[in-house]
Image (cartoon, rainbow, N blue to C red; front, top):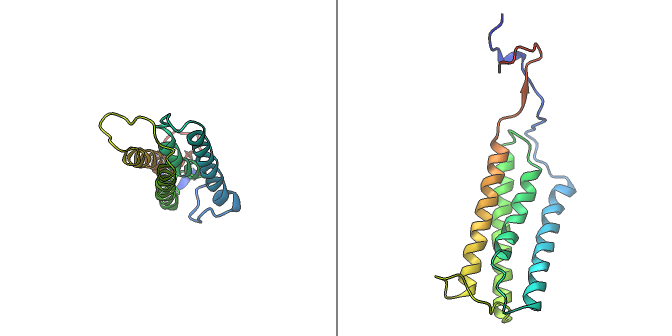
Length: 155
């Protein structure tokens, strides 16, 4: 039978239903979040009158981006991990923004339309978390790779 039988198709993506909770899967996003946060704090302390507009977006987006890189195709549980990392990244970014604003280290000009650097940074952090989460969810939801062992090319 030459039809497109899915019984003969082997899943080679390695997707699993088991959540990936190895130490590196947990600590890698934490490390990168701390690294980006430290760079932003250092830059803000070095030049408080310079606006580092992308810093809150990068800080909020780094954790979901790193978690998404570890997601396998078809791993539906990865969606929850990516979204959780995005929410955590957003909270960390807003907290760092608040600390920097309280210390007087966000004195640079804001993007037109934003009167307060705290509001601007919070909105940019939300955008960064949302974009990274969207790409991460897309990566996790893609279809697993399949190969037809008979070589018919159908799926």
